[in-house]
Image 1 (tube, one colour):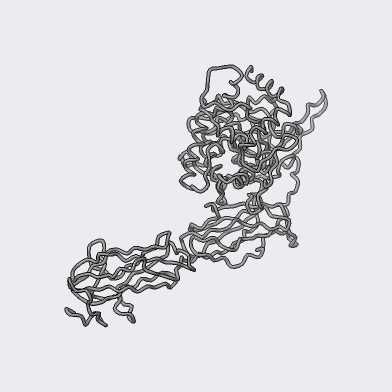
Image 2 (cartoon, one colour):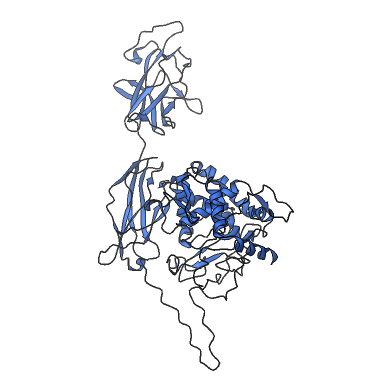
Length: 589
C-alpha cells in the first residue's frame, strides 16, 4: 500500500508542465521527426501508414493502454537497495526476469528469421510496458504463462473500436464482442494468423509471454519494415495501435529502456497507474473465460491489472451492464441483453474482384499487381470499414511481403481492400489467395497467382583461359559462367551442362571429356545445376578419356540462354592440336 501511495503521490505532483518536460527531454533522442507541440504532446509529420500497410484496427483493436511516462531520471543499469529519490527510477527500469527473457529470445529469433527487420527487444519491452505493465509486473509462471488471463475491455464501439466476436469467446470469454488478450494485448482475429509458439510447447497461447512476444515481433516485422529506419519504426508501432499518443508513449519507453534496464524477480515489477480511457465513463469490464485455458491460471482481473491503484469494480459478464439494487418490496426486473448495434460488416452480402488482373511473377520476385477485393451489399453498394482477410493457401512458399501468409486489411471509402504486395516463392506453379470477410459468413473470393521459374537470357564465361587436357588426364581449370537477365545478375536459375556430339547435334557425346558422378563414373550430362545469387555457376571438374581432338561443352539455362565452350584433348607438349570436325574421326576412335 505504501508503494502504491508513493506512486499516487508522484502522479499527483506531476503537473502538465512536468509531463511536457519529460517528453521534451526524451524527444531529442527518439526517432527523428518527432517534435513536441505546445501542449507537451508530440506530433509527427508522417504518423499514419498507407491503408495498404495497416492491418485494420491493429494488433490490439486500438484497445486502451497505459499512459504512464518514464521517470525523468535516466535508468540505472543495476538495482540498488537505496530508497532515496532515485529508487523509483530504478524500479521503473526493472523488467521481470521471465518477461525480459521472452523479449530477448524473441529478438534473437527474429534476427535469424527476418534479419532485415532489425527488431530491438527494447521495442517489445516498451510495448509490453504500455499494454500490460510487463504482464502485470511479471505475474507469470515458470513457463511464461500469466497467472491469470489479461483481458482488455470489450470492443463494443463505446469509446473503442467495434469488433464483434470472432473466436466464440475461446480466448476472451466473450461471445458477443472481442477483447484484447494477453500481455501483448492481441485481439483474437489478429492472433489467429499472427500467433506463434515462442516457448516450444506446441501451443500458441496469447497469455504466454514467450508466445506473445514472438508474435508481436513477427507482427512488427511484416511488410518488410526495417525498424532501424525511423519511418518504418513509426509505421510499425502505429500498426499495433493507431494512435499518435500511443506512438509517443511507446517511443518514450523505447528510449528509456535503450539507456539501460535490469532484471527484477517475477511478480515484483512496477505496475502502471494511468490508462488511456481513465477519463471516460465507467464501463462494465469482461470476466475471465468460463473455462480456464491450460496453463493460464484463473481469477483474472480484466481491463486494468490488479494493484494498479484503481477502485475495485463489481464483476460483470461481458457486455452486460450492472443493474442497480431495487428498493425493498419492489419486484426485480430481469436484466435484458442489449441488441448489438449493426456494423458495416453485418451489411456485407458478397465480395467482388475490384479489378485485379492476371497475377504472374517469376520465382523470388514481387508481383506487380496487388490483389483488390470489394465488399458489397446485396444491391451492389460498397461497404467501407470492413476487415478483409487475405490468405495464401495450399503447399507454397509464396507469401505477402514480410513473409506472412495472412494479411488483414480494412476496406476504404470505396469498399475496396488492397492486399499487401505478394512475393513469389521458389516453388513454381499456381497459387491461390483467398479473400474472406472477418466476422461475416459469406463465400470467400479466390484469386489465382502463377509463379514461373527464374530465367536467364545471356550466358558468358568469366575467364578466357584455353581449356586443354592430356588424354586420360584432368582439366586444370574449371568452367565458370555468369548468367544475366535484362542485364542484371540472374540468380538461382536452373541450368544444364552437356558434352554434346557437335555444334549441330546436341545429343550427349559418348567419348571425349566427361564429368564424374558421386561414384566416380563418367557422365556427360549434368542436370539440377543452379546459379548462385550473383548469377555465377562453376561446373565440377572435367576429365578426359584417351580420345584426342576438340570437343564441345554446352551450358543452357531456363529462359533459353546458352553457351558453347571448346575443350581440347591433346598429347602433352602439343601446343596447337589440329581440331577435328567430328571427334569420332580422331585417332583412337
